[in-house]
Length: 424
Image (tube, rainbow, N blue to C red; front, side, top):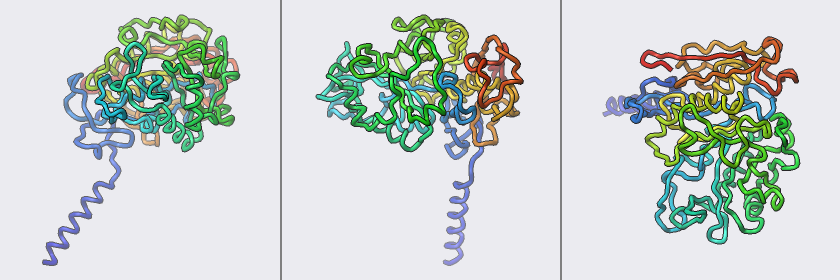
């Protein structure tokens, strides 16, 4: 009996050892389980785009300020989840079955840990409190309500406490009419210690301070409201005094078009120094999101042109992890790479190197061997056309000369990527 027992034990240990071996599957590689894919990837498919075979798909962002350090906040591009609280499978907290749309599929904590740095939250008076909710005619109902807003804000506080160099932005679609309603829930969530004061927010298109300064002052939470009256009553920044924004929903995803939201100044205005790009359909469909998100590069290009050659500082999407490869993460990498160091991806930027001095990242679908993730898988093209303000060789990654702080320093470029089955 001893021999069979020994053999069984050996088999078990071999199985455990195989599970513990780090996996190196790259974006686009075939997979049968999560174990086949490398760090920052999961195993999935995109049937809506005709890709029914499972492959490794990106689910983790690279924070651009961790590679190109110390630049003004408005030089970077960050990912935002639309209706961050509207989570598929979230249990009802009202005792009534929920009847509404869903826009995300994981917790706000998980969104932040995966690299999301902006949250869109719809806030309403409900049950003698402030809740996150979808609405019918500006009213929250027990069948459209999700959670008390303070619960989600406590998740944000826990994240900022655990990650002392990270900055989070909250966009509030504001239907709260109770006196000091927003101030009360942010105070209850212990978030005021991170608050970026409205008195220090740049106006009339002036530049933002560096992320280094924001972290040093602990001004790591930016909060914007859609209610202009809250500036005077609660000291919360009115969104469209500080941001430009394109139209949301279906009008914001029409190829070749990028109209401004009616509350916003025209996108090519220089009255605000931040630009929020919405990219999501009016009606979210989880299984279609992987295909929809593949159209983001073309819309970034259209909005870049409409905004007078300005990159989006925030890109808001539904079901942010859904894609047919690199997804919204790859697009963010490309925007930041081109804008910050003149490279095709932020992963290729090198600390202290001149602009356009890029690491060789290998084949388009190859994951970098460093701790950063793949940023080279794209659908479509992004072409940035800007006027160079000086010799690219004179600008280093950390601390561009003053003359270059406000204008990207790369030259007109258009890039195409190919793999063995598709042209991107």
